[in-house]
Image (cartoon, rainbow, N blue to C red; front, side):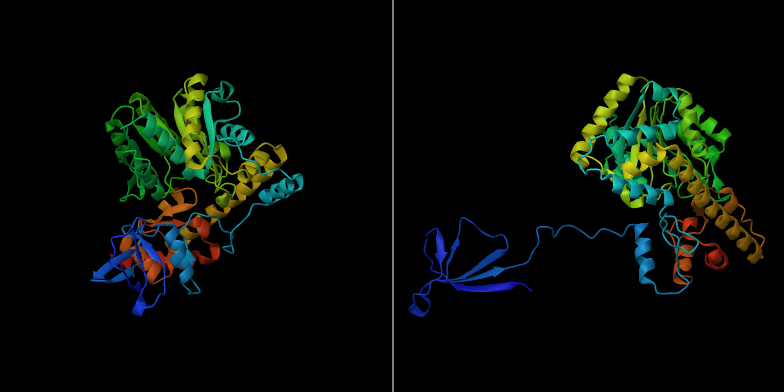
Length: 460
């Protein structure tokens, strides 16, 4: 409710209106200075009497309410549901068999070591922690890779995968104005947001084939061939999000051929290295193939999934260049972009990664835990397939569940069917049909299978 001030003001032409002579008294209630007007006060004059109204109209009145995030909004809806069988299969975060968040034992150990060591909390350089940048590039490309030894990789610590992608997008916008980024259809929901925010134009290449619930490889190759020469091609290095459908090694070779022929620039998003197959080297094979061919490559990394460092926001952007001089220039410009954006990155997550990857014993422990996490997801995937196959008497082929990899499965359900999953079965998921198997337990597979079968056959 707007507040209202009533005043009796003299109609004097002086610079201020003073409240006085109320009933011929000498009570002075103060002055309003005409030269210092308040935008929230509106005055209406009635002869010698002025009505001054202060309204609560905001300067930000024109800002509209943003829609809820399609992924993070799923968790908010899940929390509001009190049904005992509810499942949150929306956000890609690992859960134990008891569906609880999991902090890796090796991370707990390093956290304790860092606390005992008593490291200071001074600002990092703009490019981040040097020890982290060294080990993260070696982890992705291989410590013995010539591009590492020849100092042809510009590595800058970023705010996990999202922040690293955003740095690269800003670099593209600034130094390749008008060049388009091609992204897969479908892709991770935030990719489009990142490029839109950076004002980088994008278009899509075919990837998912709804008829086979598999890869539309021919469509993908045709669209990459048709793209203007020198385009940036965004590729998911492993465990494609949201489909879980990856090219075979042979298909990766063909993709590399076409990108090289068209002088495109491969741009990898590596969010699941080691978390998809359980092997760091296997999950980096696609990136290393392109680099081995002598191609210049952009690659964003994240440690949210494979080390469970979701809240630490630790990742990196790497740009493989044709010479060390070019790499030095690229790194200088990435730093220049980062400085007004967030100044410098956080230190704790970087120290965790640097200590684990840089120590052979801790690195071995990490590998074992990664294999355990990847193994649990594989077991859930097999159990879900078995449950679907045994319960569904229609003869539908559910084998695509086994052919997909990583923490997600693309069910092929449409929006109406996804709504049924949530409204009837209390299964929370994104509306594109993606489910996070990392949030599923073996004990809940049969319940989920019932929900999927009902939604697929009874909702059009």
